[in-house]
Length: 183
Image (cartoon, rainbow, N blue to C red):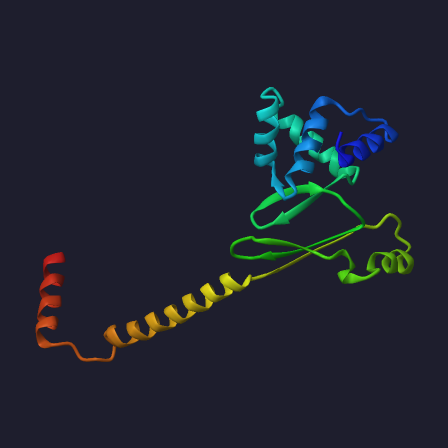
């Protein structure tokens, strides 16, 4: 049994829960992934092992594991993702465009969680920071897109006729004819 799954089993038992085969599979899938998994990815991997594990069982199990602080739920990008909880602090740096995710060093914020516990009298505090920005390649792409949009706008300003330019006499004649036909 993996260390994470074994530690989770001990915590489940302390809290009055059993490590059912479904819970074991879900914990194992999350442990083995070493990445953030969506519910769809967890379901796919669990059902590859046992196709009879239902989606509702997976959702209920994820809620329980989250409540017991065995897993972290992260809102990285457009979907919710899950990963094994591994300490008091968990920080991410996420690209807003490609959703590339970097795990940041726990020590980055120092003992902020302990300071918050002491100052505000909170206990068992966990600290999760998600910082969002653009990775270098997405930033370059956005800069190029911005330059292209500016160039397109400049070209459109030059090409589009202005309201203030007088129309040729033929244009007035054609407009008058189309108005008469419409009546």
